[in-house]
Length: 134
Image 1 (tube, rainbow, N blue to C red):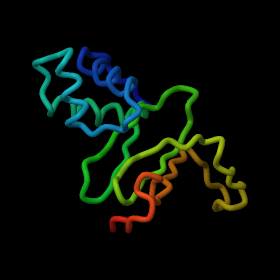
Image 2 (image 1 turned 90 degrees about the vertical axis):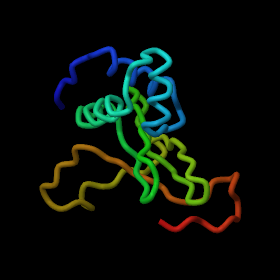
Image 3 (image 1 turned 180 degrees about the horizontal axis):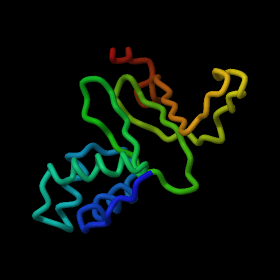
Image 4 (image 1 turned 30 degrees about the vertical axis):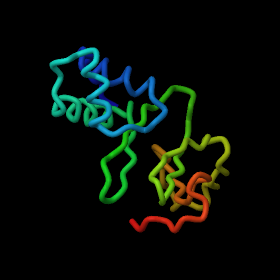
């Protein structure tokens, strides 16, 4: 992991993500950052998010045909995501609730450096609506 230089813009993006449980996209983040830093551009927010993803501070949640969503990696809050195929809502799933994969299930000598699981389905609000196709 490289160390991202702390600028006012980066700190503002981190603060917006820390305060959100919504898994926002860059445009939403940009709107909130502009409340503190009115001159910040959308391009700066995108570059900052890219740097934070490279540094492992932020993860992306990507769906074909939709804006990339971002999630801050809160220390001590290991989690995965459940994504509704109908409305696109994203929910946190505590990592402790997911069974651990036995090492024998992986190729011999494989070293796991990160785990990201996404559960796809239909949320309770959407109920029996037909799911969107990817």
